[in-house]
Length: 355
Image (tube, rainbow, N blue to C red; front, side):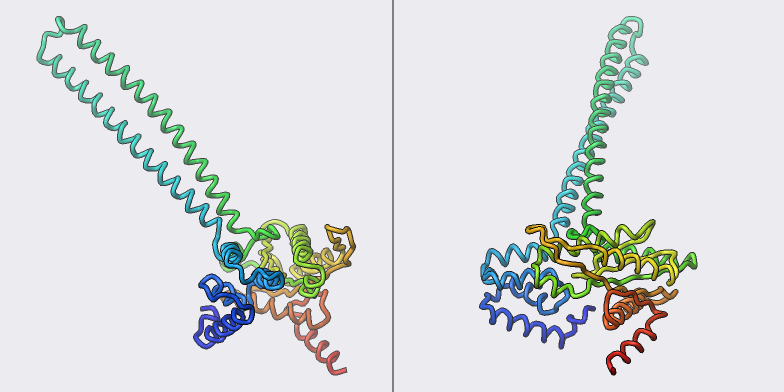
């Protein structure tokens, strides 16, 4: 259960959502309510940015705009594509069944012809009727060969269509596992990969680590330079993750400006080294505003690293990585913090705060 599904939290978010609708004079339609309830929950940064921009531009009250933005965030076009492909596949299977049924009827008719010939041979004067019997069998055989060839062609065409549909289905399935902005795995893909990685680590007795990275001061950067430039930053950071991973390592966009990495067969020490490579790669990049060519400076990344403990829920490992991430933030950002570093980092942060 999500925490906002508990009655007291749900009531609070519902009240907040209705307050936002009244504040911005937005009609309380089902679409608008769902949009602003999700906004109130605060766990979809992309939706929040879109609605903030809509309020600023005066579009938030527009019914057509509400429908468009609802479709963008709550209708999965890829699911529609899968449904369409499923319908086409069903139609192809039905067509194939009809082809095979027709072939069965043709085969049965040919069998009856041969049976009749056998009867005629057994009861008639073969010498007198030999030519007509042979001609009949030959004609039936030629007809059957023709129908068999047609069937072969039909089956070949159908097999080709099924292969095309299967390939398209696989392509859509792969797209449904990718974050469209960054090209990294999305949350759905991450959940699948982490489950597989845990199964393997448990059965093979190998190490497994999780990294969580967050772009430092991203909201300020986004508010200053605009969402388009913010999206450019996220794509650049995603590329830094991609270029510093290898093999079966998996990087995913976890939400907003937060990224997560699965590192199978990797010790905490080596995972920390990978995290620092990614951090340095991000720090080395210069952000240039594409519309003007203006250099906007550098960005930095804070990273937390945790090692999976055999038998624990996956959420525990992720939460420890998240704790390390925020320890890195509190210690000054642009750094890596592992579970082994956590005590020292927290102590140093407390000393700095007291001084």
